[in-house]
Length: 105
Image 1: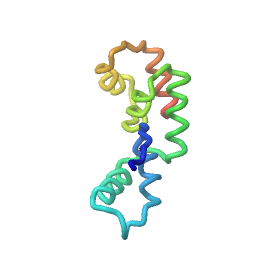
Image 2 (image 1 turned 180 degrees about the vertical axis):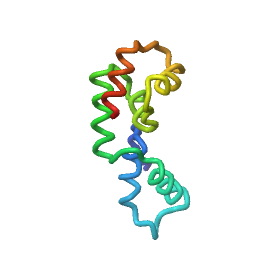
Image 3 (image 1 turned 90 degrees about the vertical axis):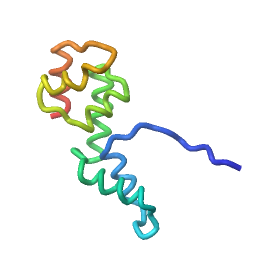
C-alpha cells in the first residue's frame, strides 16, 4: 500500500523549520545538506515567512509561487525586484513593486 504524500510550496525558512525537527543521527545525507543550506540561506524566521507569503498573495496579488520566490530572495530595491519579476508572465506596476518591498521590509 502506498502512502499519499502531500506536496506544497515552502519558503527556505519554512523548510528549515521542518528539517530542524529531524533527528540528525537518523537523517540521510540529503536531509543534512538541505538543513545546512536552509540554515545558511534563511532570510527570515519561519512564522514571519508564512505571514509575508500570505501578505504578498493577499495585498500584492501574487501567486503562491511568486510569493515564495520573493520571500526566499528578499530583494532590497525596485530594480532588484524587477530583475526577478521580469521572468514572470505578467508586468507589475511600480506601485505594486513598491508595495511588495514595503511588505518584505
